[in-house]
Amino acid sequence: MPSSPFLRVGLVAGLAIALTGCGWGYAEQVEKSTLEPAPPARPAAATARPPAPNAPPDPVVRPAPARAKSFEPSALARAARTGEARLMPGARDLYTLGENHRLSLDALTPEDMGLHSFEVRLVDAVNDATQVVHCSSGKTIRFQKRAPDPTTQARMAEEKLPVGVWLLTIDPSGQRADLPNNDWYRHISRFHRLDFVKRTADGLVVYRYLGPRDSTAAR
Image (cartoon, rainbow, N blue to C red):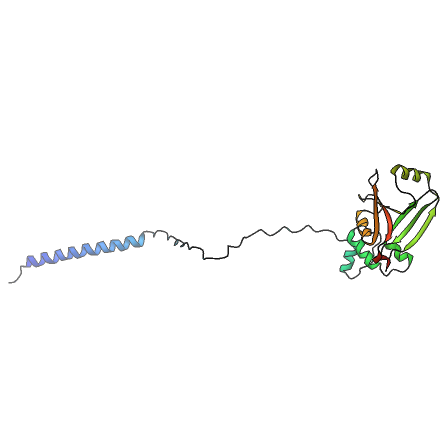
């Protein structure tokens, strides 16, 4: 049965409306998804894993240690770096004294021995004697004697210092240039026998000098 022209027009119009509505809805969704900014992506949560059995602990990161303060080397140490090591008279630090001792082992003349030596003194009723001892060999390189000074005798009696024996006097403070300082004492005691006597009222330390050690005297 032939359809009515009006019916065909109505069906076509309804189909067009239906298709237009669906198309517009889809286009609207595409447009919104294109224009609206996408939400920021969240980083994937790290999956916590239980530590493996017997796994070593994480290394401990420690700050780098502070650099040690630099110090001024002795004149002999500076000379040794340039290949010009030589004995330094007047040394009063332990390192240079040790190097002087080594460099003075072959000294033969009193002048050379005198560059690394120390002085001891003996006072009694009739003598005030000094001898200069070569530290490396233990040899006496200079001996002097004079009449005792009454002032010196009185001071020794007041300090109750022994008379008639060789004494080595040390200034631990290092203030007196005419006396060995504490480093000199430490160096001398390695190669020579000393016996403590006392500390005086003015802070000096007196030792009885008993001579070189066997290893020193054998040189």
